[in-house]
Image (cartoon, rainbow over all chains, first blue to last red; front, side, top):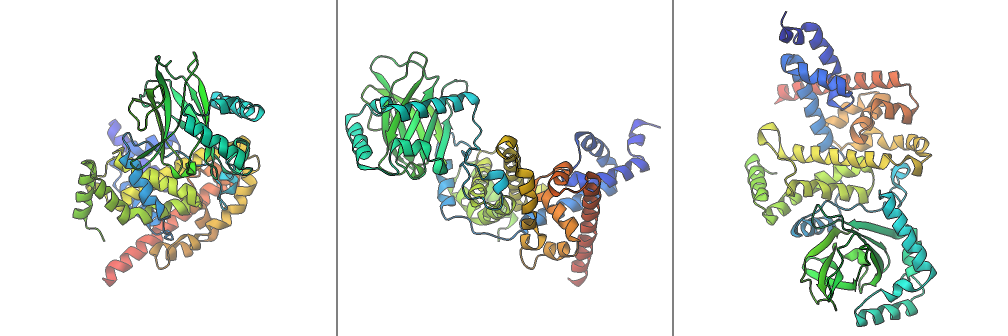
Length: 278
Length: 189
C-alpha cells in the first residue's frame, strides 16, 4: 500500500471527519491540525463538512446583533490612513468594560517593558517631589509662561500631580522610532481630562550644537508644538508640557529635530512618531 | 447592497491608495465589523479599536481578499474575529493583575446566552434556540471568545472531557440543523 493510499484510507477519513467540528472552531492542537490538513485533500466528505462549518461560521459572524459604531470612528480611520506610515492603533486603557470586567477593567493593562515602567515610576517620583521638570517644561518662553499660569490658576485637573496620580484617566503611549532599526523611543503620559502631559525620551541621538528636539501633537493637517527639549549624554530627556486643548483631542504625536529655539512648523526629520489613543 | 463587482472595484481602488474607496468600504461594512467586535468584546472602547485595527490592516494590505474564496464582507468579518480574539487573549495574559478573573468570568457567562447574541429573524438564532443551552453557550465561548477546551473547562468548572463532548455534539447538531434549514429553503424557493 502506498503512503498516499494509507493517508486516504477509510479509517483515516473517519478520524478526520471526527475532528472536523473541533478543527473548524480552532479547538484542535497542532498535531491534530497537521493530521487534518494532511488528510483533508483526500477525504472529500471531510472537506465538504469543513466547508459547511465555514459557511455556518460566516453566518455566525454576520448575524450577531447589530450595533451602531460611534460617529467618530470614521473620522479616526480616515485620519489614521491619512498619516504617512499609518501605524497600528495604540491601545487605550480600558475604563468602561462592564461585561468584560474580569479581563479588562484595569487601566494598567498596557504592556510595557519593565524598563519603561521603571522609567515612568522614576519620573513620577521626580515630578511629585520637586519642580525640576517644570524648569524643563518648555524652552519656548511664551509656552513656559502659559504653563506657569495654568499651574497657579488650576487646583483641579491641570496640575502635574493630577496628571500623574489620577489613574482613572491615565493614558500613555510609546512613540516608536521613525526608522525601524533605531533604538530611539519616547514615552508620553497624560490624563484624559487634562491639558498637561509628560514626555520621557530615551535613546535619542545627541543633538548638534544649535539644535533641539521639538514635540508636536497633530490632528489632521494641524501640527501644534507643545515644547522643545534636549537630551543628556545618554540620550535621555524629559519634559512636562501643556496644550491649549485636551491632549485626548489630538491624533498623533511626533518629535522632530529642529533649530535651537524650535520651529513654528516641523522642518526636521521625524525621530519618533506614534498614534495617540483617541 | 454591494455587488461583487462593486466590492472588487472598491478593493482595487484601495490597493491604489484611494482614500475615498476606503471611506466607502467603511460606510458599507463598518457597522457589521463594529457589531461583531462589540458582541465579542462587550466593550465599546475595545470594539472601536478592533474595528479600527481591522480596517487599517486592509489599508496596509496586510492580507488580501480573494473574490474566488468568498464575499468581501465574510473576509472582513473573519479579520475582525481574529483581531478581537487576539485582543482577548492579550488581555488574558495578565494573570497577576486579575487573580480573581476565573471566578468573575464564570459570572459573565450568562451574558453569552445565545438568544441575545443573535439578530432577530436570523436562521442562526432559530437554530441555536434548538440547541440545549449547555451546548450553545459553550459554542459561543469557543467561537466568540476564542477559548480552548481547557479555558472553557476552567471558566465553567465543567470537566474537560464533558466540555469536549458537549462542544462536539453541539457543533454536529448545529450543522445538522443548518443543513436541514438550507434544504428547506432550497425546496421552498
